[in-house]
Length: 252
Image (cartoon, rainbow, N blue to C red):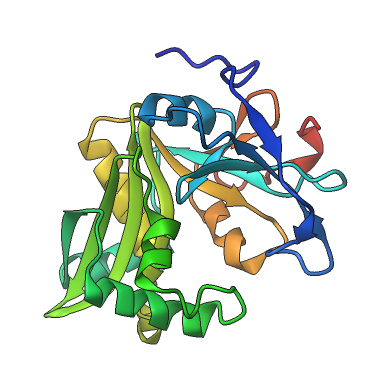
């Protein structure tokens, strides 16, 4: 399937209400949503991913804020990725000790328990720290997406889950949660490194990492994976190691 960088596929889009930004304090945000009544599938999701859209639950969305363009969709060309020293150290620390399985996306009690622990410590004000099992699944899976739960175990204990969609042209990192007590293992970084390896194993070119925000510590770590490509409104621009992402080049 060829990528048309000029416009997203013809579909119905709806602008959501203004709300406080989850990432930049003091700012407001709005989201552009794809009509949930449409018959969605992985092909349409891929086309929209090529234009900066993202999945959360059954919703496909993209930030559409009037006075802010700081949310930058990024993707990694996995065949060209070369880990830096810190990433190599993270890989060596974990790959020999963690057992990883690719599992169907369904409810498992120990996954759910880990999810609640992660949110309680990392995102206590996020509104999902007391999510029910139904809300947990609604947030992570969709009836039309091909979703994999990459499960990371340390011995008998589940220590991380990387929720990942398989698209025709790549993998999309939907959400990752892990044991916050194992900070020295850098499990969030390891999850991305594992998804890069799996994208290569599937013979696919791209790993979609969602949004990078320069002034948000929770998002800025994505800048460490190079080379990367950033969606600037009319096409993808490449940024190599050491090259700053130039927000000023984005089209409104």
